[in-house]
Image 1 (cartoon, rainbow over the protein chains, first blue to last red):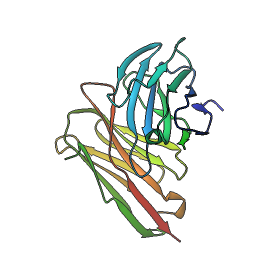
Image 2 (cartoon, rainbow over the protein chains, first blue to last red):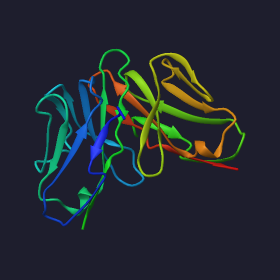
Image 3 (tube, rainbow over the protein chains, first blue to last red):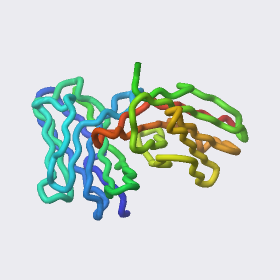
Image 4 (cartoon, each protein chain N blue to C red):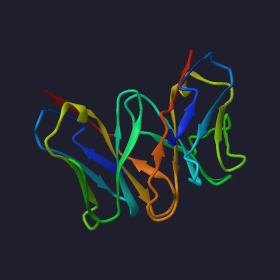
Length: 114
Length: 109
């Protein structure tokens, strides 16, 4: 399977704990995006990488959220001191850039904060 | 007012019907995406448009840049087409996708 993969698919944690999610993009894609989707809503943009550089970051991404893409390949999204409001589906997408910059989505990581 | 508006929010139809989902936007865009989201969260990109019309199987997407409007059509609809269809636009100014709220489509056999 050469699509976007995310790990884990599901995460249940207690409030106050830290969690980290991983996204492996399609190998030749240099752009990587993180989104958050709560029930019944469309995805909300969180952050965007061009290779290893984090070029854009939403105001939704509070100080408790950090994302990295150290080698320009896989990316991690960490949430520190989780809150119940962080419960959502976290989606990763990658794209090749250029004119036809279609984003390809991973299956998502569903986070439940108890 | 949201920058991307979709209509209808919910649509239930019988198998075989011709389906139209509309998307209007208020910002300058470089591209418009139609995506399909199945229960459980998986999102699949259907089309990316910057002008004109695209067709893939039973799906047709059109865009009118002057009117800032796009439509997604499904011909000969089938129960497996049941999903949420989302319109998203990429603005000129940044790399973000601005998402519509989605249209929940149910096709009954």
